[in-house]
Figure 1 (cartoon, protein in one colour):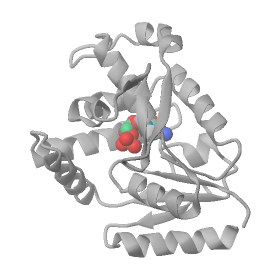
Figure 2 (cartoon, rainbow, N blue to C red; figure 1 turned 45 degrees about the vertical axis):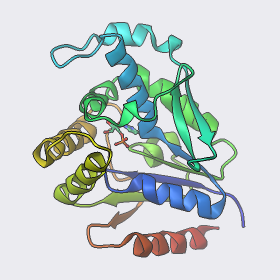
Figure 3 (cartoon, rainbow, N blue to C red; figure 1 turned 90 degrees about the horizontal axis):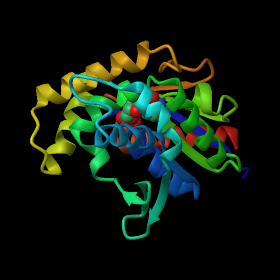
Length: 227
Ligand code: C5P
């Protein structure tokens, strides 16, 4: 079977990363979580005081972009790659509700997107990759052989994210998580730079009422059709 590029886009907390990881490990492909890269930049902006609840100093962030080095390093114990920001493992820190509340603002900046898209294209140049995000099928790999667009209702997605955060011991309410999911949906679909849109040739999957296995079987069927 020939190696292909699989682009998975969609709203937050649709289970894109779970599906993408499952696919990558089944096919022996590389998995790249591009949301982690935007989250790491948001964390950097927070650590340097460039973004707070009150203000966002875009200029300073843009000027320090060359000092930001992002890497995925595979952790054999976990079976997946973790995000490193300037050689520090930030995998846990980038998943907090604070980072989630700032990341979509950071992701509107054209210079941030240009830097990350370039790095993503480099990672995928040999194909055999499953990448998930918001602009993978439209901007990063417009020629991907398979494009999936995942959706499910905001309440289903908020419940999933809430359960995840609670399980990790985070102190959040369901309302807070729902509000964050809805805010990110809005910003992600309304920004000028690479908004989240359904690529013309993407296949939409609404998984509100699908089990993980059902969803996986559907996508494997699609992979078979193009390889
Ligand atoms: O996928 P995840 O929810 O971790 O992504 C966090 C945020 O990063 C998204 O809400 C979006 O604002 C931004 N993002 C993006 N483009 C991508 C991946 C993520 O703008 N390819």
